[in-house]
Image (cartoon, rainbow, N blue to C red; front, top):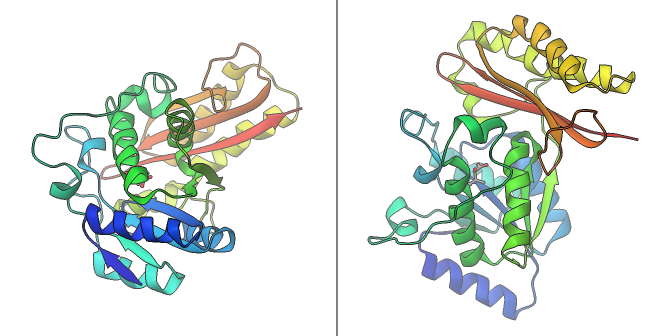
Length: 281
Ligand code: PAF
């Protein structure tokens, strides 16, 4: 595996791959790799000639008071895991490389962000869209792989690619979970032992909501109330439970089509999100 630290070198490598007609699958990450990331690499390996991963904890997508400083980092372990997983090229830029002096242009997302995490994390998706625009431009992948745990991020990336006519295919993969149902996340390491025991109730609560829909409930308010009642067992502070069309993220009076039920819970040192996307036929 080759580790590349500058945009110029990475661009050189991707131009070379394009010339040799190799298809490139790209897995963007902020590191502290877990099985969720590695399953994206596995899928990317099956579907492409070459897999590129990036590790960059993007300061632009963290708001004031958010966990940029305490976001878990372990680059040496990540390099080893990426290599073992079969990543061919690892792009590992510094913040100074990604945001050069006099950085003047950023992307502003104005749809799909007035709900869920977008409401409580102003500027977050602008930061995600800006860094991904840079990364897509440097790496020029054929396909880019994202986990559905961050379903709103997937919806925003879908809009980014579509609105900017980007030549990259978005591949969204199902959330990878611990045995007890907790969605794998780099942030789980920041849960206390008690919180770790409580956190699986987030997914169980969402499942209770999904089961109601499967049994015929079509009122989003009824589903949300039921999820909230179950969420009491999850401890923490519930930031939201919401239900929308997916990926448009529009409110519905009567649930229909493809929908998402999503929740965010704040613990002492970690804020966790999870969701279920289902199609009502
Ligand atoms: O999901 C993440 O880890 C990040 O938001 C991403 C897509 C790598 C952009 O910084």
